[in-house]
Length: 253
Image (cartoon, rainbow, N blue to C red; front, side):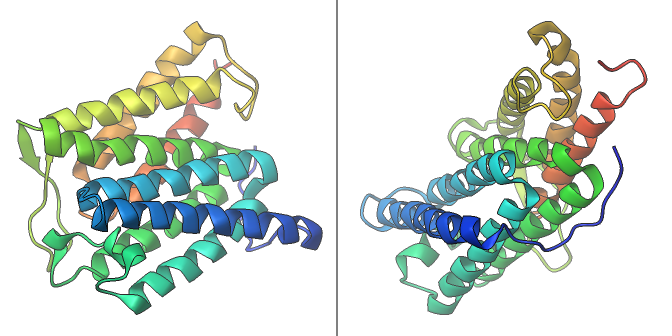
C-alpha cells in the first residue's frame, strides 16, 4: 500500500446531490436532539456533546466505507458549515449549548473550535498517511472517546492529570474512563478486522484479537496523555497508524 497525499475531492455531482442532503439531515437531526436533551431534559453537556461526537464519527465511518475519502470530504464541508453556525449564534442557541461546556467558561467557543480542528486534522492526516486504515481511526475515536467522558464522570474514582496546552487550565481523566476507552477500542478493532470492512481481508476472530489489543492499548495511552481538546486528532492518527502497522507486519495475514 502506498502513501498518498490527501486531496480535497468530492463525490461525483450526482452522488453529491443525493448524499449532501442526507448528511445535512443527519447532522442537524443529532445536533437538534443533543440541544433538546440539554436544554429541555437537563442532560449534562458532557453527554450531549459526546452524543453528537459519536453521531458524526459513526457517520464518517459509514460514509468512508461506502463512498471513500471523497464522501468523508463532503461530510467535512458540511460539518464546517454547521460548526461555524453554532459559533456564530453562541450562547442560548440549542446547537451551540449542546456542545459548549459550562466548565470551559469563558472560553466555551474555543473548546468547540479546537476539538473540531483536531478532528479535521486527524481525518486528513489519517487518510493521507494510512489510506483505508483511516476507518479504524474514525470508528475508534467515535466510539471509545465518546464513552470515556460519561463513564469517567459517573464512575471515575481514580483520577490522573493529563497534559495541557499552554494557557489552558489543568484537566483530569480517570482510570475507569481509560478502561472504557480500551474496551470500546478493542471491540471496534475486532469488529472491523473480522468483517468485510477490513481493508485487506476479513480475519478470523482469533487472529483479530492480538492486533486489536495492540491498537486498543495505543489508543488508550494516547487518549490518556492527550491535552484537553486534542484527542480527536491523536486517537484518529494513532489508531489508524497502529492498524496499518499491524496489517503490514511481515507475518501479518
